[in-house]
Length: 128
Length: 298
Picture: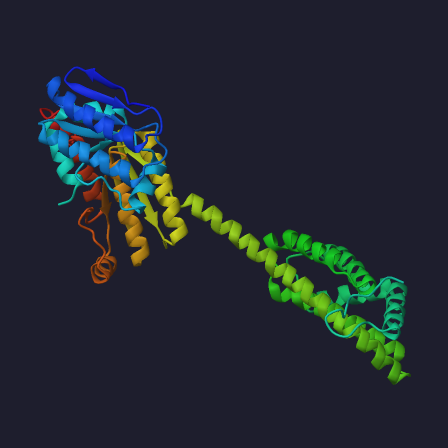
């Protein structure tokens, strides 16, 4: 099932609704990287609240998306990772390094709105 | 006659032993009142079970006596085992010690043995055979009761440990978006897992953005727990929260550096105050004294 991508002001919101196959993930990546230029978006939010597993491919693809979108001149934030998923991920060593994360959609929007302050937090959380 | 299972581990019970044992049981039934009183008196004399009144001791003694005789008679220990567990459940909260329980069962054994001596003193060979049948059964009863008591106490201890564990991991909100997780005492792997679970849930329910984990009260930390702490910090970041660890003792700092745990991803601060100040900085709070802060409204 393809992931709907909504345009909300200067941001794009990709809201994952169900478990994703590898192909879905690649489609999502391609669509986001393309549209972020098309709509001149300043930021992208990927909402994974609905996911109750996150494998290494998904986690790597999310990281790739964040890095690619950065190269396209916008910011990315991953939101809604479930507590259990988060702990399972770090146990597998999938820490989404260098990718900003936030609790939920609202927090993600705040994060992108804050811009400069967000950059500071990212620096803090990725280590001194 | 019921099948005797007392010596099932060793030699099969011979007809002779069975007959002697039933004679023994008959003797115990016959002198029930007298032996029971004698036993209760010896218990009081020995000044054990001081936590219980004399009436209680006598009542319990009666039940134990009857269960004891029944175990001798039938050779099955399930009923006695269940009774021992039940008794332990009642008396453990009142502070009865292991030595007291073992003591009273051994006293009963002695009281009964003496009554046997008295009864068969004229016929030494018969006494010997009676004791041959009586001793293994009596020992096994003593073991059953003692083991039941100890198991029950261990279960109580486990329950209490569980209760302490649950009490000992509070996740507290001190400001909007700021949680504190004070950890006190020893962290074993199980508790570490529980801490992580509660913290991650707490972050979600309180919508926390910054968490201060204060480990001032933790005396020591091994590499497993340290690595677990690192994982917790990472997992919290995935939920969008920044973790600040405060109050690492000199010993823990040395241990962590010596065992080479990678702490580069952790923000650490000297004490809880520093941790909260740092967290407030991240959240954009500014705390100013009331009187001097007329122009610096927070």
